[in-house]
Image (cartoon, rainbow, N blue to C red; front, top):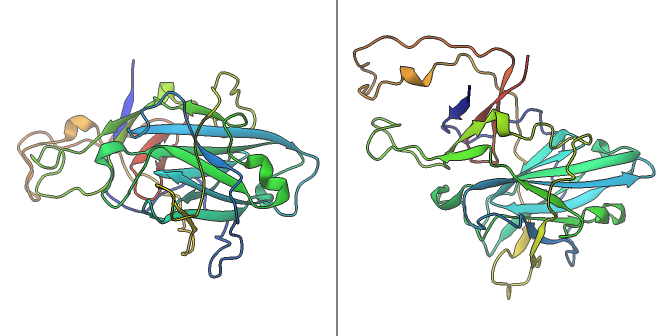
Length: 299
């Protein structure tokens, strides 16, 4: 039996599986701005560059000892979520335009360990139906190791592996004709449906086997010069947004939706039933403006 989980986006705050614990190092004063990025823009070799899609990136490396400092600059198009050794770190970038593309600067040292480590990044592009406030060139990721030890993370096509997560499907709410939103207006990114049986569970953890993943594709160099055609990078100038865990109060089956309901007056028919899925459910939201997803853990 195939199970598809579909949730819509109604809020703007992202909800993470773990609280964000790092701070933006270039706020209130920019102190960690590279004079030249050594990492490049990279992407997945087989995706539609500007279309809707979720792409994962992984970089596995070894450290002789736990570092005292491991500062990186990073950004993505449209948005990213960063994990180190399976732990959520932060999301970004700050809302940007292509001539003033913001990047975050964080210290990853607290998340690292002696021996094997993995840095994993999820990048989402909401495609043509994205929120109008998000400008975009194409799906891509860029990381620059600011600390000497962190240069191992410089994004290059031959060092990073990538995966196109086809478990996600775009679902844009039909609000114009009152199908999905009655008597309202929708002005955010598309919602997502998720095929849980196709999701690469554990992709952000050190033990995940990524040998079948292809190498990333080089897109363009990163620069802060106004002569560039796009992605002219600048440091973030606001603190990082915070995240918190949210739990579902209840779930109802999609069949309980009544298209005839208007402005609080229910249509005729049976009342919706409360419906709880077995196991643990958590809410996960992509980036700063994305759709929540139901992650269903096995019992």
